[in-house]
Length: 190
Image (cartoon, rainbow, N blue to C red; front, side):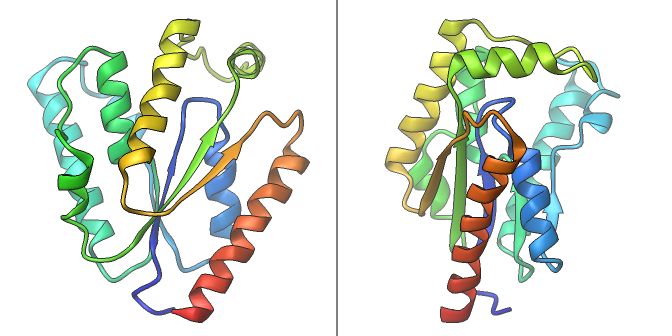
C-alpha cells in the first residue's frame, strides 16, 4: 500500500465502540499497525506523579513519530482526545491549537469519530461487568461531545462520523464495513 495512505485515528468518548471499530479495521487490513493507549502500563504509575506525566508525554511523542512514519497506522485516540479530556479533567493540555499541531503531520490523517447518546452511554457503562468504568455526569458527557465537535470543526483532515447508538454489534459492524470499503477505495486511488 502506498505511504500516502492515511494513518487512522479513532476518536470518541468512552463506550462509543472504538475497540470494536479498530479490531474490525485491523482484521481487514492486516498490515496496519495498532498503537493503543496501554492501560496496563499507565496503571503502574500513580496519577499526578512526575513519572506518570513522563509516560504520557512519551506515549504522545511515540504516536506523533508513528503517524509521520512510513507504516500506515491506526491509533486509539490521539490529539483531539487530549484536548477534550484535559478540559473535562481540569488539567493543562499538551496541545494549545489544533491547526498549529496539525502542521506537524507529514502525511494525511483520517479521523473516525464515534459518538453516542448519553442514555446509551449509561446503559453500556452499567452492562460492563469486566471493569468498573468511570461514569461521567450528563454535564461532563455533554462537555466531551461538545469538545469533540469543536475540535472536528477546525481540523484540516477528513473526519468520518458515526453515531453508535446501535443496540447490537451486528448493525455497528455493518457501518464499520462501509468505512472499510471507503478505505479500500482510497488505497486504490492513492
